[in-house]
Every structure is written in C-alpha cells, then in structure tokens.
Length: 440
Image: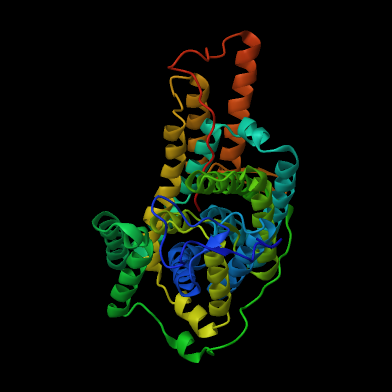
C-alpha cells in the first residue's frame, strides 16, 4: 500500500470473497464491484447525513461537500488502514439549534469549528499518549449518560415537527419500523432512508412539498458556502459533543479491528485528528460537523468488504453530487412532517445508544455512584436546565455533561477517601473495562 493508502492488492480473483475471509482495508475486488460497493456506502449514509442539515436549516449540498472532503482526508490521514465514511453527526443537532436561536447560522458554525479544533487537539494527545486516559475520564457510566442525554434532550424538537404534519410523520415512522423488522441485510439497514422516501411520497400526495426552488436551480454549480462567527456563549453547548465524537471514533476503530482481525489501535489518534479537521473545515465553510457512521459498518458487515477503495469511491461520489444545486434543493424540499417522523426514532435511538453502552459494559446501578451520576445528569439534560452567568448561557446538554463528570469523579474520590468505594470483587458493584460508543 502507498503512503496515502491509495494502492490495493486484488483479493483472490477479484470477483468473489474467499470463504471464511474478508476483503481487508488494503485489498479490493474488481473495480466495477468496488464502485458498486462504494455507491452502497453513499446510499447508506444518505438518510442520516441529510437529516442533520434539514433539521438544523443548514444547506444539504454544502454538508454533502464537506462530508465527501472529510471522508477523503480521513482515508489519507489514516493511510488507508481504517475504512470509514464521515457523515453528519446527530450529536451536533442540539447545540446547532440552540446556538442558532441566539447567534444565527454563523454563530452555530463557530461552535462547529471550535468543536473540530478541540477534537483534533485531543486526537494528537491520543496519538502521543494512547486512549487509556479517555477511558479514565469517561468510563461507561459517564459515556452512556452523556450519549443518552444528548438524544433525549431533543425530544421536544421531534414532538414539535411531528405535530405540524402528523399524518406524514406517522407514515414515515411506521415505514421505518416495518422495514427494519421485515427485511434483513442491506435493505433493513437502510430503513431510515426507505422511511424518509415513503414519507416524502405521502407528503407529495398531500401537497406538502414545494418544488419551485428545485425547478429554478441549476443542474451544476457550487454549494452555498458560509463563514462562521465566534461567540464565547456557545462553547458550553459544543464541548459535550467533542466527548461523544471521541467515543464514536475510537469505537469505530475498535469495531473494524475486531471484524478484520487487524491491530488498528495505532490509528485511533489519527482517526480522531482526521474527524476533527473534517469538522473544522465544515464549520469554516457552512457544513455540519462529522463523525464515523454505524450505517457504513453495517454495509461492511453485510458485504464482508472492508476495502478503503470503496470509501474513496463513496467520498468522490458525495463530492460530485454536492456540485448539483438542483439535487441540493430537492433534498431541501423534505417536509417537516417527514423530519418529525424520522427524528422521533433517531433521537430516541441516540438515547438508547447510551443505555446500550451501560448494558454492554454491565454497568451496575446497585453502585450508588453510577446510579447518582445517571440520575442527576439525565434530569438536567432532559429537563434542559439553564444557567446564565453574565453573557454566557449553559443549557441542558452542557450542564448535564458537566454533572455526569463532576458527580461521578467527585463521588468516586470521596468514596475512595472515606474507604466506602465499592469492592471490585463484588459482582453486584464491580465495574468492567469501559467500551466506547460507536455510531453517529
């Protein structure tokens, strides 16, 4: 493989996968098959990647542009060893929407830039010193709580959109649920995209879609770029997102390593740096922040193809589509009812992902430290507690994240000082090694 990871050996005859093996990141199938799999990755990321700009009011084509750029940069920086697509991160929805209320789109973009720079810096630290310090800072009780409160904090936004067009929203939600349970393989993994398309059709039949902007748009043109402005008040909204993105990136690297049998730990820091730089670029140009995608892990698991060549195809395809204003305007016509139906599931999935982190790591809530950490932080986040000091306003996600960190580490330190810390040999209170989150 070349230094940039753009050279691959052909797996077997290039037409089929050797029984019991996978196509590793430094291999590929024939180019027609590789292109086909790459386009599957584009389809897999569509539903989630476009929902973020649609919900937050960001230009879809611009977000797609920086998604493609970010993916290609990720592949270069990780030297073609970590297959991944960088799409819009759901974790950015709440802080972007909150900051827009006070500072508009430019203020939200400033927050995205700050999050990206912070993530890149932390990636450098991980690359230098390893990721063990992250596990100590964010063990499973804390990570699960933060992920859960970010999703559940968005529940009112999903409700508001659902109520604006309940029939369309309900149709969207029902199709997503039915497709996910009735079909297996790639179709089942694309349930969100299928549901959005079905909801869109319902909205068209109910005359809820306005195509005037699509008709006026050119077929070829540049995406709409915007510049950020920076406000100290948004920092508290975006810092929690950084913690989630670190967990998602490391979780992605560990998942791919597990499925391919390769040691990718040396590339964990590079993956975080690449996502940080991609997010920074997006913030400077008008796109939403990025993250690795569980949907694309699903495609790899289904096809047994982990070739980074397929992701080069996906990244370049995303770039090409971003240069069609007509395509961007078509995506922008997705009505509020469809967003409400999809968001009802998606926001809940983010919340349940936090619960899954607890379950996978066997977090014991008979341990009063774990119980108190989750109890306090979740109520602060879901209730959207607000604290204003001077010109700074901190809301539920920021305060909930701070509460999770302070309560957990504060109680742990006091328990250790007093000698009341749980017995690590007690199966009711023992805490396993933390396992970080993966997904969008």
